[in-house]
Image 1 (spheres, rainbow, N blue to C red):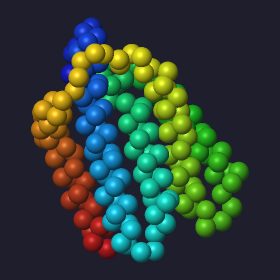
Image 2 (image 1 turned 180 degrees about the vertical axis):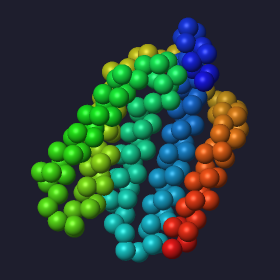
Image 3 (image 1 turned 60 degrees about the vertical axis):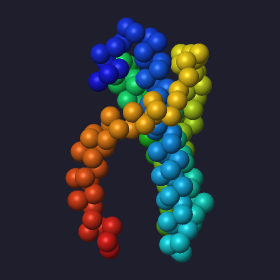
Length: 168
């Protein structure tokens, strides 16, 4: 909402984008690390497949920054990237998935096209986010605390609905 309200203020947009992206990257890397550690002790799971799936998925979403372009009402390119990613995944499954043993490859292939396309899109637009201003720890903590209510509102119902599956 903040992005939509300040579309005309480029310096504010750049600062908001950078702070939010730092926080999102920290959360994504924390989630990847925690998940790999949990699955390491799980035993019968391919750790490399878990890591690659999480990495390509979370970092791909981080690079794409849907929240930012949604605030700017520029969802055309985001929709095109997402659709192309799904088509590439579908083609991969049709051509290369031959047995149930390919499940790890299929999971990785689901996120890999999005990661590659988002990386390309990010590299094309990286100059839009350059600034001389610095991001500090206090800015990141403020961003996390201001978004905590949204996180709880989104997380709590999902956790409540998934507790039986998690326990099993």
